[in-house]
Amino acid sequence: MSNPIKTLTKKEWGLWIGSLLIIAVSNVLSGDIDLLILIAAWIGITSLIFAAKGNVWSQILMIVFSVLYGIISWQFRYWGEMITYLGMTMPMAIWSTITWLKNPAKNGKEVAIQRLTKKHIVGIVFFGTIITVVFYYILYLLDTPNIVFSTISITTSFIAASCTMLRTSYYALGYASNDIVLIILWALASIDDPVYISVLVNFVIFFLNDMYGFISWKKREAIQS
Image (tube, rainbow, N blue to C red; front, top):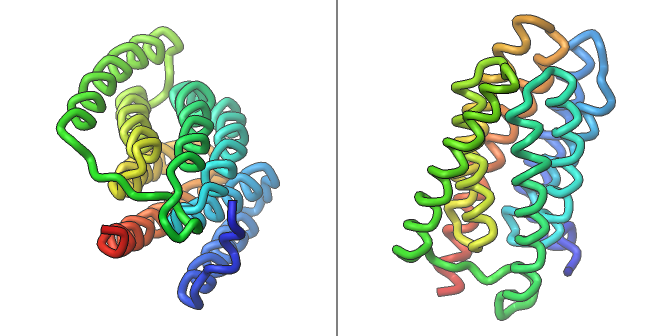
C-alpha cells in the first residue's frame, strides 16, 4: 500500500499529466462537458499509471472506475459494457486487490510478477469461451447496439482482468486489445451523439497508457527474475 506517486519518474509524470490534460481538453471541445465522463476518465488514467508501477492502488481505483463507467454505458444502452464492468471487471479488480496485497515483490513497493503457465492459459481460454457465449446470448436478449463489438469487448475484458489477477505482464496487452474494441464502439456511438467523442478520445489515451504499462512490466519482470 505504498504511495505510488513518490515513485513516479519524470517521464511518468509527463505521461500522467499530459493524459489528464488531453482528456480535459477533449471534453471541453465536445461542447457539452459531462463531469461523470471526465471524472471517470481521470480515475481510469490514474489507475493505469499506478498499474504500470505494479501498485495495488491501481486496482482500488479500477473498482471506482468500473462503477462510473458502468453508469456511462447504461446511459447509452451499451448493456455489454455495463454488465462487463459491474459484473466482471469490478469483482475481479476486488479479487486482484487481495491477490496483489498477498504477493508483494521483495522491495515491498510493487506486486511480484508471475509468468503464465499452460494451466493458466487453458483456464483463461476455457472460461473465456463460456463467458463469451453466455454474455452474447444475454446481449442478444437485451437488443444491445453493436452486439458483435460488445461481445468482443467482454472477451478481451475477461482476458485482461484474468491476467491482472494472475499478476502477469500480459494484463496490459489484454486491456490494450479491449481499448481498440472500445475505440470502435464509442466511435459508432459518437455518430449518434457527438458528446461521446470525448469518451472515444479517452480510450485512445487509455490504449497508449496500457502499452506503456506492458513495457514497464516487462522491464520489471526481468529485474525481479
